[in-house]
Length: 112
Image (tube, rainbow, N blue to C red):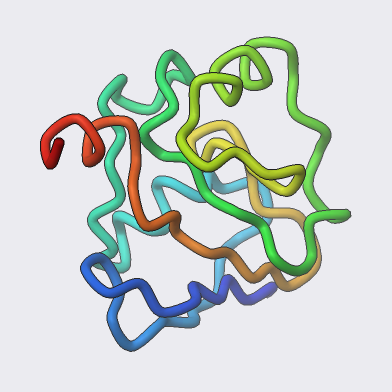
């Protein structure tokens, strides 16, 4: 089974983490199942951008984002070409490395 590696994040995953994920499983569900408290304000229906992640390696194994995901990504804080919504991206057959952004739309609003 492919590995999902999360780079260290000071609040959500300070030590980083790596675990196996069944292909086809949502990144958001997998992160939550392994104790990474990623925000998902819309209950994982791709209607917000709070579960924004940066795919640092292995992104070619993911299906292309659909129009709905791309529309929501436009609202993400710190958008990069490798940005995806963890609720919409499903694990492919290859290993994947992701980075959790320092802030989300909700974090930025709460701390402002």
